[in-house]
Length: 192
Image (cartoon, rainbow, N blue to C red; front, side):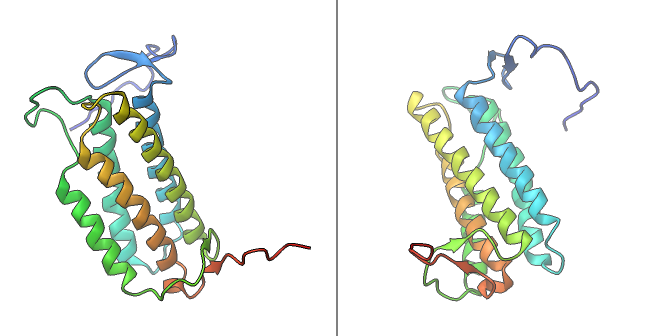
């Protein structure tokens, strides 16, 4: 269990931060950018959950996702070591599979799309779409990190963040009265 007694340490005043290994890196390091974007995704999901009254099933899924995102942050803050054997908390394939099952279950209740969906409709939906875009940024940074070194992060972490953005898209539609309140893009609607 994590125990935080002191919130400020002054160790980051020089523009560096400590990874889970204790190694200090600049705060602009891609690894720090990645887990920062994951943290932002988590916060945006938290705001969306404030607007989900009456959607207990969706709220349950998102609660689990928020916990998973802390797992992902822990995964990202400790670079994988050669021949690592369970020493660090890592995203596992079962977490990715669970997201796929959630996507399929929610999507089964939605009608087919006839256009792209605008981030609008209900407050919950708009916030879920915001979380989706932040998640996509996290994914882009994680891909860049993975290209720095093959051992930069595990494949399940990348798979998880990719599926999560899909889940957040479907959840955004689900929060829009199962897609009935979706606001669709009308191509060229404002042309003169």
